[in-house]
Image (cartoon, rainbow, N blue to C red; front, side, top):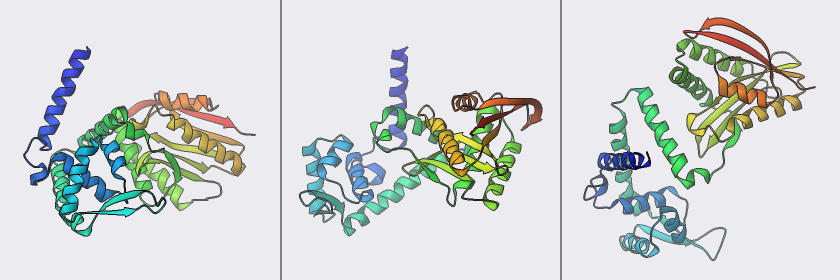
Length: 305
């Protein structure tokens, strides 16, 4: 089995390197190699990085990187300065001329990826991106370098919540647009009636990428409702769902609620397991027809007092 997996991985490598033009004489119709473009990209997108750190992060031989940097310096593209926080440390950055040289490469790269993705329908594009994120998470050590943070909602988040609920539940459970409409209604009411002292939306995020969400809203003075728990497929297995629920419960206790209730479906096994682990107990179940499916709705409750 491993031999077949190895061959499949090699086949994918051959396919993708051909698609992005790595085998061409110059990457992105430029006189630069793939390595040179990668070095320029890091220099353009980092505030300041030491040569040793750049070599380590890109997995480059220090001598090879030094020769690339010397060529950039000779063209007037590279500046070397003392780090703000450490007078013994020197960092690198592109000069204005270096940024002008890099700008067309950035634009060509964006056009190349747009041309690759644009023929696909929106759900297919999302599947490609999720597959890429999964490869990065499972094979890349850098994916774990930044922690997942839980933050409050801000403009743009609510639209993402509605979109991702609609897309993920359609793909994984076959639910139709009625579910997306329900999520949109819940989210809109949250914004219109938001009471920051007693209600909260948490967005889980890593390096600017949203990975999950959860809401706590007031049902009355003593009862809160947990709503819209979501964890992106590539972030599952990291304990993120439990973190989101724990944040909800801790906030509800501090806000003075006596009980948290939630509404879910009996086929959402992963979420139900998390609720049970957090101490919630099922209090009722009722068959119904919603979202284009025959479902069994469940109410769960957690007593806080």
